[in-house]
Image (cartoon, rainbow, N blue to C red; front, side, top):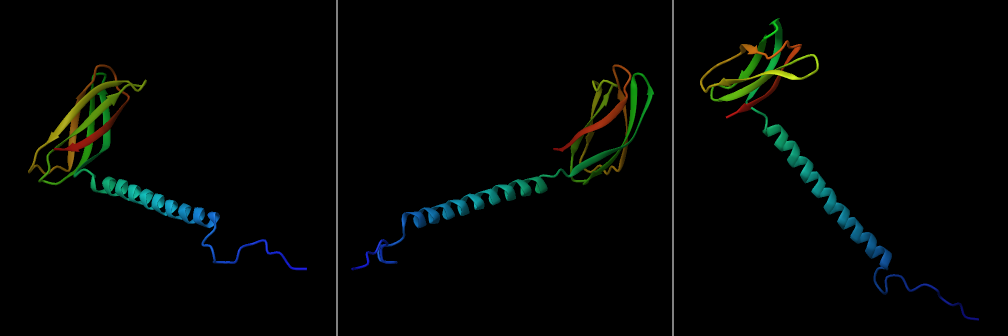
Length: 134
């Protein structure tokens, strides 16, 4: 009796459908992986290079009266940079009771600034919102 072969001779008729599908999935996965890496790299570069040349930090604040807050800010900026920092005062319910923009001009070297902020009611805290160049 003769033996009947159930499978095709290996390599004679090209790759099977499963092998072709696996190859396509590998290519799609590599392309998507590269795209994700590019997006993450671009976001990281934008975050690092987009940092402002004007930075500040609140180091002290006092509440001498119900309608005034005094803040001390440490400021880092280049003399070639102009910009604005915004500060605000909050009451005990976290409602804004005062806001002020502090402008810095080109050529001005600043390391510490004391800001007096008028409030509409008694404040319980003060914070720096943002600093922007330009």
